[in-house]
Image 1 (cartoon, rainbow, N blue to C red):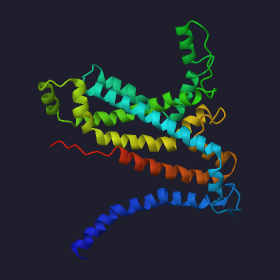
Image 2: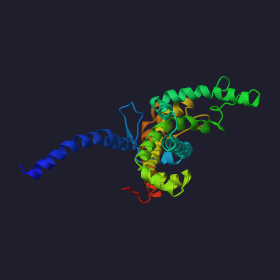
Image 3: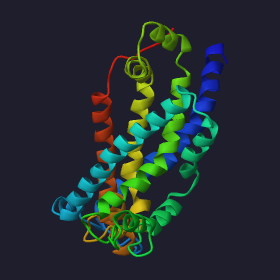
Length: 297
């Protein structure tokens, strides 16, 4: 065996296991979902009737699909805005301003990431409780009158009510990413800027933000992808898609179709839709956020 063949065999020994696992746990489920979406199948019966693209035509005429897509992108938009602003703000505050007790605040902000999203959703259900919850109690104290707003039971408030737990549960992780990025910026750049009389906001816009832009871009894509696939848990625990589908999202609608109404073919077509939306949204974001990479030597 030649040296080139040995080198190729050595590289293949590392790549092959990963490639096999990727095919088993990623590619195979995608192909299988696409295959099932072409059938009328309950999910438990042995009978699978081939219906071609009928599930996709049904999806096209289903108003709940459009409502779910609208809700998904509503949650994604405000989650990206809320998480990124707060993660960058806390990261800058804990690194650039040398706050006392910075390590303590890092633990406090990161704590929600340790908790299961189900625990967070249950906690916020108590906070939103119309008669015993903290939020209505606080408003009653401030307004000096009894407040009993059904935050999760009224379609006027229910979708907005999902945002605080969704944002709170994601800040800590992305704050740690931003802190690591800010700490990699040479201190000499800030010292030069201060000598030139640049204030903190000028330093942030001209030094900090351009040099952490790649991490910001990756974080935004991560939030979008995890939101399209991960709003299921919060919606499932807090509202079950209600009232009147006002908080319905694609992930939870897929679950309802597949495991409550035993319409697995249709559920698989929703899964294919989520995959397509994830890919399209990621490509659009990459193009919108594309900018020249700033390197520090």
